[in-house]
Length: 318
Image 1: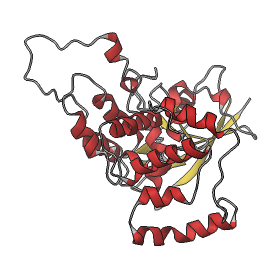
Image 2: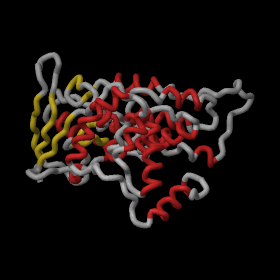
Image 3: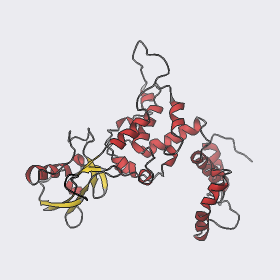
Image 4: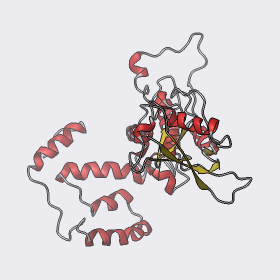
C-alpha cells in the first residue's frame, strides 16, 4: 500500500514560513516511521532534516509529532498511524521552536530541567563508602528514573502551551525523582522552590503528558506525588494546596462538591481575585453548575463521611 507522508519543512536560510511537502512510496512490512523518514532522506530527498541516533527507544532523540501527537518515531509502526486516505503527517514537537524541518530547539527544555537541580544534594559529607539504598527506597522513584528526556511530554503539555513560565512535566518529574530519593538532603528546599508561579500547582492534569510518554514515567502522576509531598511537609499556604484540601473536605462532608464554597475557601480573603472570578461564577450559575439554593448532601452521606475520615486518618466526627 502506497502511503503519502506529509512532512513539515522549514529552512530558515530560504523559507519565510514553514510549509508541507509530500512524499509517496510503499513502505515494506514492519517499517517504523523512522524507517520511512530514513528512506525518504536516503532515496528521495537528502535535504530533509531530523534527529535520530539509537533507533532503539533509548536515546530519545527522534521524538516528533505524528498526526498531531508526540511519539518516538523509532518505535512507532507506520501501519499503526496511517490515516484515512493513506496519509501520515509528521511535524516537529510542540512547545519548542522549530529550527529546521523536524528539528526543534531543545534549549528551553534543558533550561527547565536545570532549574530543578537534577542531581543529588546529600546533607551529610561525602561518605567513605557508596551510599546504599534498599529496593524499597529505590522503588519510590523507579518509574521517574526511566525518563530518557525525549521531550514528548513537554511537546503535548497544555499548561506549558498556555503559560511558558510553567516548568513542564519532564522537569517536574525529574524534581520528584530527587525529592523522593532518600539520599538527598534538600527535600524541603526542593519542595518550597516548586510552590510558586510555574510550579506544581499550575498543572491542569490533562493527562496528555502521560499519553505521550514512551516509557513509564507518567509525569502527571509525579506532579501529583509532589503535591501530596508538599502538603505533608506543611506547605499548605498556596491557592493550589488550599484548593486540594478544601475540595477533599467539601466532598468528604456532603458527598458532592459545593462550587460556591470552593473558590471562597481556596482563594481566601482576596477581594481582587474574587472579583476577577465573579464572571466565571455567573456563567456557572447560568449553566446549572451552581444553584441558588443551599448545597444538599447526597443520599447515604454518612458512608462518604466514614470513608473520608478513614482515608484522612481521622476518627469519625459526630
